[in-house]
Each structure stands twice: as C-alpha cells, then as structure tokens.
Length: 281
Ligand code: SAM
Image (cartoon, rainbow, N blue to C red; front, side, top):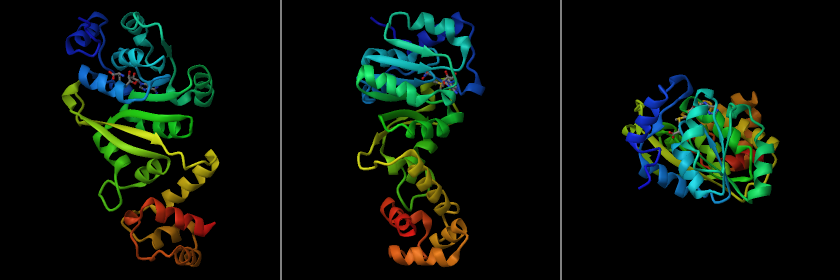
C-alpha cells in the first residue's frame, strides 16, 4: 500500500531523516492529513498544468502530480532541495523552481504552461505571512481559471464574506469582483506539523467570464474600492468625500447612482459599488 508523504508517520520520518525543523519565518506548517490533501488536489481543476506555491516536503505536490499532467512548484527554502529530490523521485511530471514566488515572472510562466498543457490552475497550502500578496499576484493573470488555496480561517472568511457581515472588507469586494469565491473545507490545526495557532480553510476562486478588462483598469477600480472601504463602518459619503477630496463631487456621484449618502460602506454589494464607480467616470 502506498504511504503518501502526507501521512503523519511518513512526514515525521522525513523530518527526522533530514534533521528538518519547520521554519516559522517561511510559514512552514506541513500538512499531515492525507484525506485533506487528496480532497484539495481533487477539487482543484488541475487536469492540465498546475502551479503550487511552497511544496515544502512535497505532500500536496505528490497528489497534484497524480492528478495533473504537469506541476510547477515554487519553493524559496533551498534546504529542502535534497528532501524534494528524494520524496518526489517517483514523479517525472514535477518541475521545482527554487525562487521566491513573489519575484517570478508569472505572465511568462502561465503563457508557457498554457501553450503546452492547455490550462493552468493553482493549488497551494500558502505560507501565511504572504497570503494576500500571493493572491493579488495571481489575480493579475486572467488565464488562471481556478485558484484553490489553504489559508488561515479568518482570511478565508474575509474573502468569502457578504455585505453586512463582520468579515466583509476590501478583500471580499476585490476577490468577488474577479471570482466566484467558495469555501470548500475547514482544516483543523491538528492537520499540520507543527500545528498552527489557528484553524485553516480551503477556498476556491473561479474566474468570472464577465469581467474582461486590462490590469490597469482593474487596478484603478481596486483603488476606488479601497477608498470606499477605508472606514467601512462609516457612511459611503464620508469615505468617498475623503477619497475624492471633494464633497460636492461625492454628493453628485451618489445622486447619479441613486445611492443614499447615509448608506454604510459595509452594506454595499458589488452591483452598487460598480454603479457608483460608473457614475464617477
Ligand atoms: N505544501 C506544503 C504542505 O502543505 O505541507 C508546505 C506548505 S507551508 C504552509 C508553506 C511553504 O511555502 C513552505 O515550504 C515554505 O518554505 C514555502 N515558502 C515560503 N515563502 C515562500 C515564497 N516567497 N515563495 C515560495 N515558497 C515559499
């Protein structure tokens, strides 16, 4: 019977064999729950090429290699070189790039992978200290249709939150503008070695087909959203006035969009926010 890397006993063996200690600075928490790892890979739409950020000792990479045609994984910790050379040796469809993912040329990589494998998705147990910058870098590549990631529960809830809930924030509006965001599974802290202080969640972003715009247009819209949510409990009028540095302009735009100036930013949904943006242009 196959003993996957993600079984607690095999992970323990690998860590001991290589004298490895999870590095906090790199957000290293290794998954030791084969059921979760398999479910995550299975749900990720990774048939063609899949990009993983942070393979660690290879637990999720192994399952991705079994489900996808090709895996490209970015790992920043070069101490893991001999480990991955060993644990992933049975799989010839895995390419490891020893680089900080935030520094890679994602456009070049996705273009190359899409040409050869037809589709590119992302599946990763993200290092928590860079969750948001990694996601926003991925959001810039419209060719990535599915992003399936394990994140801290609180961050996952913010991305999936709806108006008027306590977790609703700029992250919710920005993520949901470009994607349908779905929470897939909860992952308890005990599924990791070492166990983090908080629980995690696997969320999936599925790219919306109806948003066809340039990166610059999206960036301008996101700057507007940040302005609207600067103090999300305040009224939209107050936030907009500060963002525009002009109370009259804010008033006119709200009137044109048919939105009461007393509406709280945290109560505004995608459609209302977009209407306000259009009214300003
Ligand atoms: N995928 C493995 C698993 O599920 O067991 C490990 C996940 S661990 C939460 C995060 C991994 O990301 C670590 O292996 C860490 O070294 C790596 N990492 C941290 N910062 C990174 C970066 N900037 N670029 C690429 N990998 C990074």
